[in-house]
Figure 1 (cartoon, helix red, strand yellow):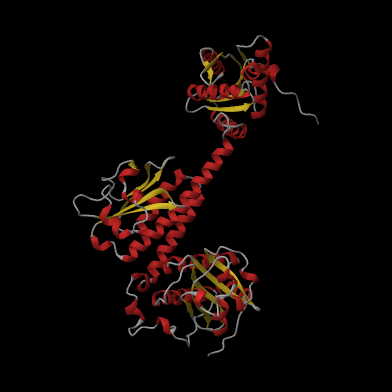
Figure 2 (cartoon, rainbow, N blue to C red; figure 1 turned 180 degrees about the vertical axis):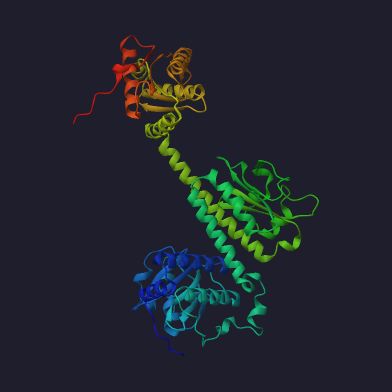
Length: 530
């Protein structure tokens, strides 16, 4: 057995910076993250690790799917990679729970209950033995020459990344994986024969994920998908749909290529990929009658976008001839579907959280925080465009009586019903928010004093005809008082404008309620104390 010098993780990072003239370790880390993700995807294993030697420990520098954080505190002898590092030879374990040498190791006997392992040493011509690249599974996996060859190719990229040339190995493929024919014959797939092309696809997928995160919204995701997926699937036409709230209707998010056969939405009950999401891709090319070309001139595959056992969308692909849907293309389609599902699900959760932060939970109107942000934006545009912005501050008259007479739940219903009325009352360019308690605030864009006052009067008049009900019982009608202030007539800043509208509302209530009062110069806020 050839003895290779061992190099530490710190030295690897330092050497990579010197040789490749990188600005920081983050560049190396980004590439390591990409390569470990590539290993997991191409080897079809849920877990992939890159570890570098560090004293009597192995330092975990990149991972995909590793569920625990204690790896770096584990001695060599208690992890699979330590055995690869000690012998500087590849190692494959089909089922560690049946191996006397391994079944008591902490990651086999407890979380994450590993079973299968395939690892290969990272050996440089100059640096020597620097670490291990491995893929793992929680299910037993037989020896695979294809997986071993993939890891060998990727290990060369990792060694090259840190500024060294891969050393010529003295080891052979483990006996369990040996076959009578050469490796190239065993793995004819373009995944191996054209690694550069596969690397390009993974870079495109990485770019897709980055752009989706950068856009940070579902609305911006569509154009990004429509731009990148034609590069991932040349000569294809495609369609990505995303489900609505109840997952019964899927609406178009992105289109590319020949779009003649697609509509803006798809019913879940008509889509085979949604109805039978767990069947394999081979079946989907035959069974999907919704999107399949009736003339049989195109071959079609339809994949569900699934997260946590829920189908959130559909990826539909069409190719001009049956030969286009080769195994590597199928594998790529499944990989893209997984990435799209995770990215779009994350964006949707972020939008939901943002929406929760912007909306008042009781009324569904925008909250005070969002109003403050939008008012500043509207005033900025108005100051540059020489236009007016108006505020109508509205208060429900004698609201305390509803709470005292009918209870707080009835009072909450009054607030909800009035909010529904406000949503229908405002224009698409206006914003309605709950300012606090029974006070509401309307932001009117491009509205001068006269326009804003007329709108407030119309609001006051129409409100009187709303009959409030709670649990089938009439609560009677309500009236409102309102104060109106406009920019730049009554104030030059957002806080001053709100103050002026609030003072006008106060005068409306003090003068008898059920009326509208326009702010005047006396409603300016008091000067700040020095």
